[in-house]
Length: 370
Image (tube, rainbow, N blue to C red; front, top):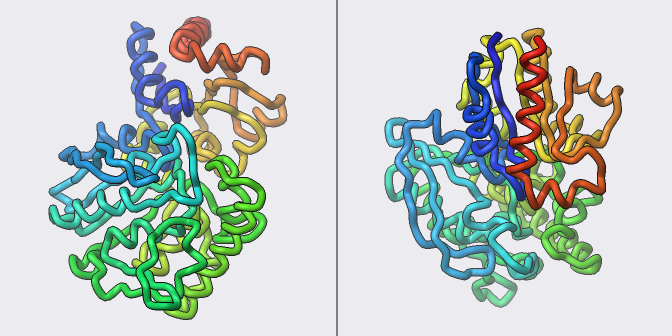
């Protein structure tokens, strides 16, 4: 029997790599392979470290509120490709107190600029986990693009200033100077603005009040209008343009970036489908499994590949908020949860690694019954 462990991270508790390592250390005497997965947010670089021949580049950049921090990216020199994780420079987890109105993706732009200077011609930007709603203006500013107000004054690239931008000058764009291609890898399909757009869907978790959410949505509509007037690109019509506070749409307009599904890219890099074909049972999962999992979450995409090759899928999660119908829709044969009831969730979060080990032992017992 061949077993493949292919989890996503349990956000805020256990990384996908840690889960894989725990399985490998606990399970003996079985044919087991493990691959850490990610959906474009935290852990994306960790997931591809084992499969990319890279050089780790560390440097000092700005965090979302312009504090100096150490960050890094991966440079695959043989393919002139840089892999950059927005969460490592402009991520919500970097802040004790989120401040979406004053936050910027500038630090992520500094990572990209460094990669360009080191010879990268292909930039893969994993865009999940942002603390920002600046429509990518921070990244663009770090890459040489300038924003001006009605009086011709430079505008600082933060969310609260989006409505002040009336002119964009990209004559000094580093992307154009170096002849590079930028791809934004996203895990959502939200439009740029509106009720399902970047501000209404995600700004609250980045610290925005109701009035600020309304302002940010208006600001995104404004900058979308500037993009259309300047570049004849309607970002609202681009699937996933609302990802990372409108970063995806903004970079599509200003830097001709492609928007691609992050999980598909990571599946390709990790050769996930090939590994699934060789396995009898695939153990995958994420922090919470509920009806939202069906909406293109990583586990649902793993499930589709498992079904394609007629294999068995076992799921491990922090908490399973579903029923047999949900299990059937996700093609899940067995579910193992760290928290068996909602009231156990806080304990499962605080003692995640211990709970994970216990759950892995439950899975081992089930393996032995086969």
